[in-house]
Image (cartoon, rainbow, N blue to C red; front, side):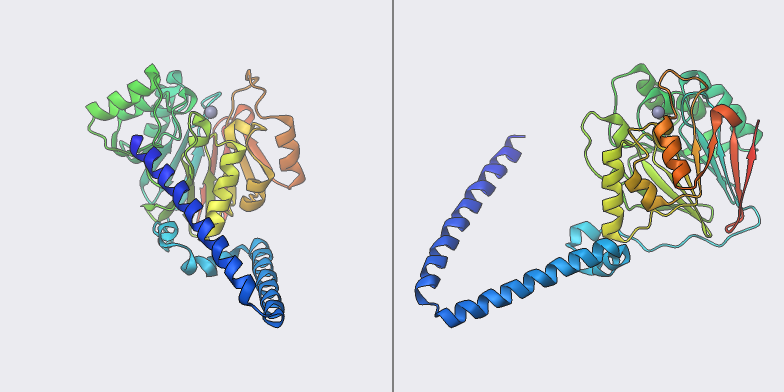
Length: 346
Ligand SMILES: [Zn+2]
C-alpha cells in the first residue's frame, strides 16, 4: 500500500516536471519560428486531428476495424488474446439445460460427453441440481463455475462438490464473509478440487465447445454482482452467452473490452442478466450480443419483481424469444452446431 502511494507521488512530480520543460521549449520556439512555418505546422496538426477523428469514428462504427488495429495495441492489452476455434461438431452435440431452481441460477452444459455446471441455485436447491446432473448420466463434471459469491448462485455448489468428481472450480477473484461461501470453499478443499479465477480472454474447451471468459473486466470493489464470471460458449456456429448478475456498467465494460480485442459477443442465446433485472440487460450489451433467444432464470412471484417489465418490453422490441424458468420449468437447448431446438419441462 505504502509502495503504491509513493509511486503515485513520483508519477505526479514527474508529470509536472515534464510540463514545465515543455512550456520552456514552447516559449523558445515561438521566438524562432517564422510566420510561414507556423501556418504550415498549424495545417499539418489540423490534418492529423482530422485523420485521428475519422479513425475513431470509423472504428466505432466498424468493430472489426479494431480487430485490425489489435497488433498496434500495447502488448499488455493483447497478451490474453487467443485465436482458438471451436472443435469439430459431433453427433453428441451440445445441450444447455437452464435448470429450474426457483429464484436463482443453474445451468448444465453438456458437450461431447463432458459436462460443466454454471451455478447451483440457493442452498436448498443443491439436492435438486445434483439429481438433475445424475439424471443426465454424469458422475463427474469437468468444470463447476460459481459466477459470484451470492447464495442464489453458489448455494448448492457444496452439495455438487460432495456428490460428483469435479476437476476444477472456477470463481471470480472475490470472496464473501458468509457461511454459504465458506461452505463452498471448505467443500472444494476437502474434495481436493482446485479453485481458479480465469482472466478475461482466457479460453478452454469442454468437448468440442470453446469457452471464452469475457468478464469481469474490472475491479468492482464490493459490487459482487458485477464481479460475475461471464462466459461465451461456442459449439460449431451455436453461441451462448452467460453473464451471471453483472450490472449494466460491467456489461458496458465487457462490450468495450471485447471490442478492443476483436472478441465478438454475438450470441444465439443469452441468459438474461441478473434474473431479468432492469439494472442489467442494458441495450449496449443486448445490441452487441443480438440474441435470438433469451432465457430468464427466476422464481415465480419472486420478491424482486424479476424479470422487470421494462426488460421484457426491451426484449420484445428487439424481437427476442423469451423463455422463463418460472413459467416453463427447466428449459433445454439442444444444438447440433447449426440448429437449436428447445424443450421445456412445463
Ligand atoms: Zn442472482
